[in-house]
Length: 203
Image (cartoon, rainbow, N blue to C red; front, side, top):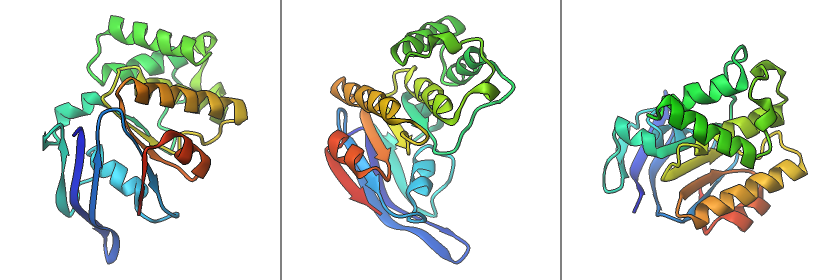
């Protein structure tokens, strides 16, 4: 089992956001994380990626307590944009991939390969600030998968994409699952959840 979330609870002040949440994801399995706005989906994803600490419970990665070093094996596409507007696209990709432990040579090779796959290879020298919302989403997806994570966490990955862009990303997500990547997909797109995921988890 790649990921085990066990008895996670989290409150912000008097507001209980998560209460005794349990979730498992295995290699080659995709789980749709569903729930209305404010249900705690993003909070749970931030706990799994160690951006937040739970009040109770724990997260296991590959059978051991999730540690900082495990984040090298996790890809995370957040719902909010996390890009530096004044960087150029290629520079941004290399910076983020170096944070995952790749050498500069490895990072550039992986980034250029995924840029070609997603049809964004001509963006390498373009300033990030000149990208539309959908273009930024493609860039963030490329960066979240280019280091070949064992667990991929996607928070509203189709946000800002047109129909063609959404279809392309869904195709890539399905291919990654077939290759053995474990996936958590948080989305309001029920069709995508049905098409891509093996099971659903409601918060």
